[in-house]
Image (cartoon, rainbow, N blue to C red; front, top):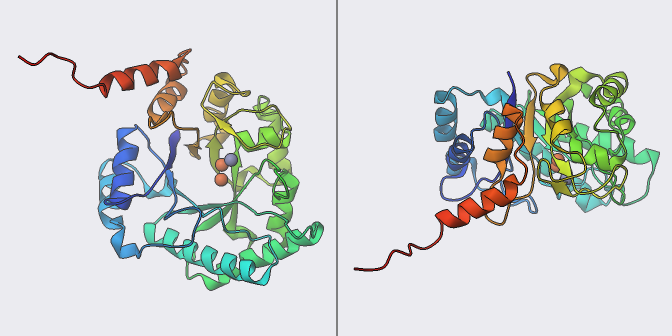
Length: 307
Ligand code: FE
Ligand code: FE
Ligand code: ZN
């Protein structure tokens, strides 16, 4: 089975129920979400989020919670050794693990962080310690933290498979650490994404393919090795449709949730169209322009003359 969906928001008034409805309307059989605003630590109580209603709808539509993904807030920086930032990272990560468990979601994607203190190798030891402390502080027993492969912008750690493997090895709980591979990020980090087999072999040799739990399927605005991290719509970037379709349909990646994090077209979500093309293998040149034109036609005011 192939699982594909996108990064969606959790917004008032229906929260998780609304997110599930949105995912279903886009033809998704998986999706990823933030449990609140990604840039702050303010979280509504779980009781306000319509979790049960959302779960019921998702399950009764024939889908499983086992392929859902939560993205941890990006303000968490497990690699910062500033006392306050470090405490917040541990506390926030522990809470997010608890919340994932309450949602019944198995995967929590986390950016390994930025080595802002320029600790070099010691940053890996310290980051692994922060992950361990968060896992110990959380009551969650099952949620996996999925370390995301990063583009290598600024002091970002997690730019190479070796870096991710090192973090896993230095943790006391490597079994609680999975991996999220982002096609845009690894391209920008310098991996030849078009050569899927070569990249997967390298991943397998260094980390182990059994630890690959989530894929972020994005085209990239920039060439290989640019260290930029700017996502592009499927077919409009330097990776192209054929390469991304190869990833989605690769025999070794069966069963893994693929999440699109491609840019919106103004207020229009591109995901239904991107998913349709990836599933069918039929790329439609100019789809973005066509979609924008058809949507603006739909929302155009009724021009029929009054009687
Ligand atoms: Fe991410
Ligand atoms: Fe990503
Ligand atoms: Zn990114």
